[in-house]
Length: 362
Image (tube, rainbow, N blue to C red; front, side, top):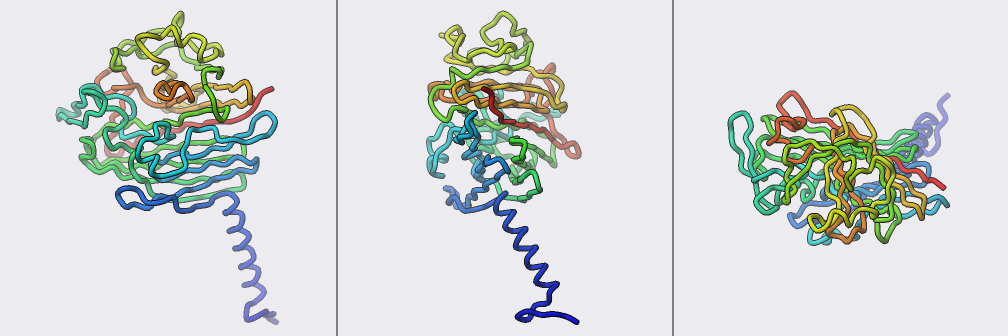
């Protein structure tokens, strides 16, 4: 005998209950809303990821920016640990601390040009005579789309997609890029980058998040450790010379946990702060990149990555209010045969992963 209630069978009622329960759980883990319209008329979305411990990450599709990341201190109090602003227009016009994704090529390309397979390519120069962070309109100034959201019992994720068309900013090939942000119950924020191309091109993707683990004030009191024995020296325009040099005996040695502000004055007057590329090891292998501690709050952020280097930047243009730890390939790699290659070809996709893990100490 088939029992019914208001025209629904018991099986249908059970299915409806399971569906609503699943939807409710999804709303706890992943939520999506509107964040406004970009200057080009594109709709910008905001996706919120949550874990079981109270952490949350807000991601907007403009620049694939981390708008807000709530992390607990040693007493369990949460605060946003990335620099951010509340309005889309501020992100588009003038906010200098966006936690954006940088591409098609992060960092600098000397002379705003390169040669690949015998063909010369001329890029938009937006850093004197050089190109930096993808050009005048890089990935950080573009609107991505939400390709997918997902959740499991212990994590929530969003996958964003951006198609950089052949010739954009002077780069060859249609580059189809996806980025998956995943927030886990282990208090990890994972970034998984993938990109495919239909023509040989160059790719170097990174997150330019400005971290302030105290939720405000100076970052110079943060304790930093970078397990690296060497770096890539650069000229006054921050273009690598091609040399690989040891960090030992220099103000940039962070192999032992060191207060960031302790030796920063030794960099002056040549540099106003840290903006250095540290060599981590083989590309494609997960390894530690940095450990950052904010003593007052007790917050700890550990960085692991498959990328071969990490760029330390102390927010010099923002009066040291944040620290950037940009896992990436070496700057200007296309001009140095002794640097790991950033060339991506059809059938051989780009794939790198970085994980930021948050904890506390007494």
